[in-house]
Length: 96
Image (cartoon, rainbow, N blue to C red):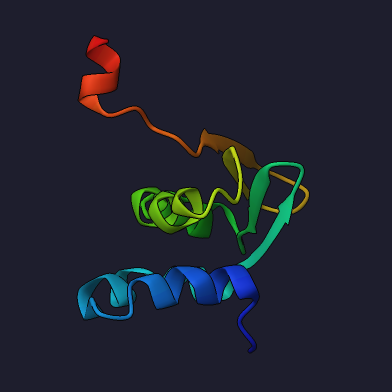
């Protein structure tokens, strides 16, 4: 299986942290695309979607740092879809 560019970007961002690399393994079964300000991640099934949604904090950091989108959309083709904002305000942003 070949990795797409977005998968390589996320995995290379964490290449110095083997623990996070192991956590990101469910991402290898996904197809990631970028369109209209969204990063779309195609999951295998609903259970896989739950595994990938647990990785959102790891996904947001490299994607947002490069300004690649406004939201992450997790999808199970023909079934489930969930959208998550790319930017999550820090506590200090909430107090302002």
